[in-house]
Image 1 (tube, rainbow, N blue to C red):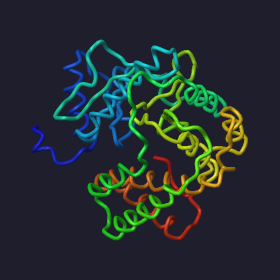
Image 2 (cartoon, rainbow, N blue to C red):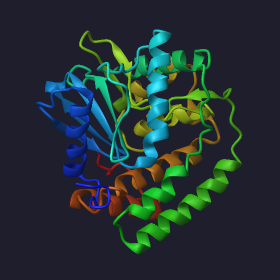
Image 3 (cartoon, rainbow, N blue to C red):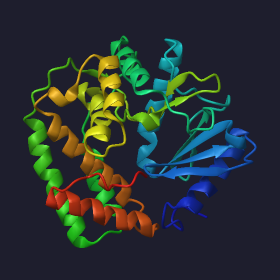
Length: 300
């Protein structure tokens, strides 16, 4: 199948790209299992011993190359993060889609404690900056592209685009209190997994950037505050582990709203191929419109 013939990045297309990348990297593609589909398609390969990430768009290539550089930097300073697998040059590129291979972490579903998360994030932010440039954080960069490609109702697209404009203006007014520096960019419980020895490791390194450290704290706070996915004790452990409670900062609600918007637009990418995702997008948008509780948002 050529680039021009491929019309959608769905699970079948992603797996086709993965199988071809495995051949190029010299990996035996047995036991392939999809984990999730978002900005990347994530697969377990070789019975979970390897995890592969297939970029949705060719424009993901710069961030994936940065992800590989970040992984090598963190390994060099002995920070507990995901490690690249195979001796092949990475990323492997198939039809413009960047594909990377990583050492599997346990069964992929054993998470760190929230206190460990806070301590790991504090340690990460305390590292000397990497020996290469990181881009500045631009939280809204992905919103436009996601909405352009999403198969959602016109009214929904218009509302989300308008909300993005409003929040962009609010973001520019924020007075951050933590010193800026390098960021993970997507720090949450799903991205801190245990390895085979039970040690926590930070994964999904493609969002590294420079910017306000508050950005790395927001998701754990809102997972407790907005969705009830963490208990109060778990959130307290996270804040104590890091040494700062972002909910006490006046700009918290603005960052929370931005992250909620990103969660909706991330999911909107799958609306055309997944009826459950499409329904969840509309449900989430209705709560954004009405200001009602987010407790009914289903994890994806």
